[in-house]
Image (cartoon, rainbow, N blue to C red; front, side, top):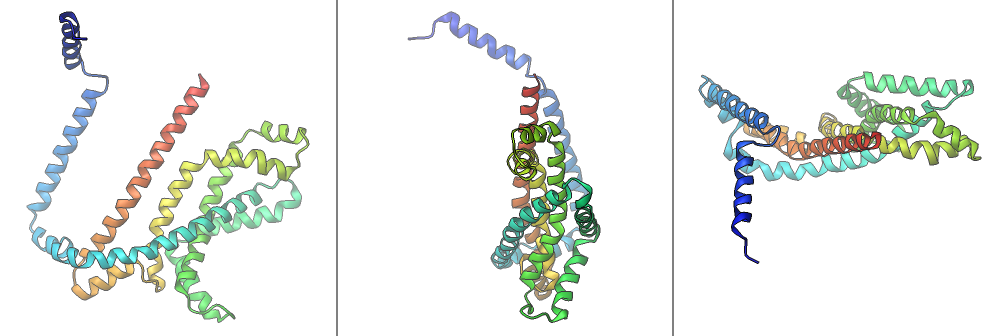
Length: 286
C-alpha cells in the first residue's frame, strides 16, 4: 500500500517539529558534550606544549616499549585474576558469616559481637599494604609446621581478612534494612531464629546489597596488585621488572590500561544496577 500525500506531509511535519523542538535534556547534553571537548582540548594543548612533554612522552608513553612489553605484562595478569577469584569467594562467605555473628541478638552473644566488631575495626583501620606486609612476612617468620614460603597463599589470606571486614558491614546494612516485621512474621509461622535469618531475612538483605558488593569487588580487584610487595609475580611486579630493565615507566601505563579496561565496565554495570533498583522502588511506591 503506497503512502498517500497527506501521510507523507504528516511525517514531514512531525520531523520538522522534532528538529525545532528537541526532546527535553538534549540542549543540556549538547552543552555538556561541547564543554567537555573544549576542556579536553585545552588540557591537551597545555600538556603537549609544556617544556617537559617530550621527556614525559619518551618515559611514560613509549610506543616501542608498549609493543614489546604488552604481551608479557598481560600474561602476568592471569595471576591477578586467580587472586581475585579465590579471594572473592572467601570474602563473600567470611563477610556474610561476620555479619550474621554481629547481628546475633541478646546479651549472651555480646562477646561474639564484640570480637567481630573489634576484628572489623582493625581490618578497616589498618592500611592494606601494611596488613599485607604483616601477614606476608610475619607468618613465614613464625616457621609454623606446614606453612612454608607461599606468597600467593598469604596474599589471598590478607585480601580475605581486609575485604571481608568491608563486605561484612555491607551485609549488615542489608540485614538491618529488612523490616523487623518480616522476622516477626516468620517466627509467628513457627520458624526458629536461625531459620528466619536463613530463609526470610538473608535473601532480602543480599538482594538489596548487590550493587555495593560489586563496588567492593572492584576495590578487591585493584588491591590484588599490592601482593607484589610480598613476592607474587603478578602484573604490577612484572611491570616493575620491565621498568628496571628498560628504565622506562611505560609498563606501568600498560598495567593501568589493563585494569581500566576491566574496572570501568564493572563500574558502569554497578551504576546500571543502582538505576534499575531505583526505578523498581519508584514503581513500587506508586
